[in-house]
Length: 265
Image 1 (cartoon, helix red, strand yellow):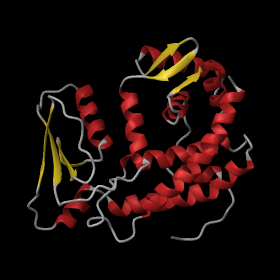
Image 2 (tube, helix red, strand yellow):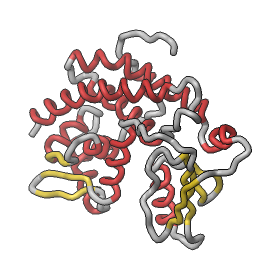
Image 3 (tube, helix red, strand yellow):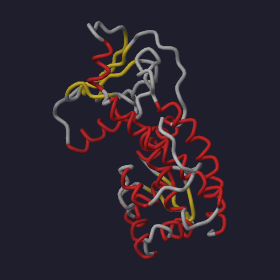
Image 4 (cartoon, helix red, strand yellow):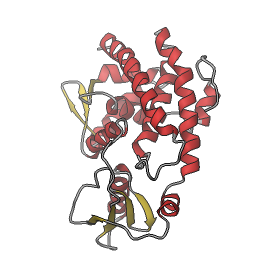
């Protein structure tokens, strides 16, 4: 892994991580997804979006729309995640912990039970597969090594697990996941977390939005990183080091966030 400086990353580096300017909805969701339990006062959420240059009126409009869309529920001036987003938080939390289950060589295969599905049903199926770290072999057929839990069972999905007969299992893994691309992304994120760590220690608000965006990029990656068993992972797999680095980064950043939210209640 190449050496990095200790200075916080520049705004241009944010774009290199694949992060576009965040909308009010994205900032609100990311803040709640990283909060346990996932509920915050409206005043705190609005104040937090202001760090990203979002106007209070825009943030409040977004909050109302998210309640209407079933993404949030509102009680006594507080907003909380709802519906599918609660499952997404569980998936996100799972990505931050490496599953250490021994792999016995079995694979999980999930197949959509019906071709006659609405666009929303197809999207939900795909999100469920990605959230469970499966990869798509071909349309509606998803699979992964059985060293992590499979997707949730439902009437719309057929799931089986067991030994897999395959001429070259490493070739299959390379077909399922873009390993070189994932490794390059993990290295960029590792560098970004290392550099941005000093911004947390400084405690200033001027770089808080930038620190948050770097954390969001790492969380997004770790949520879908395949967590391959050691027998199938490449010899160098930066995702493992990234997960450990993010744990330290997040613990410190959560302290900074708690202080900010406490001051804006």
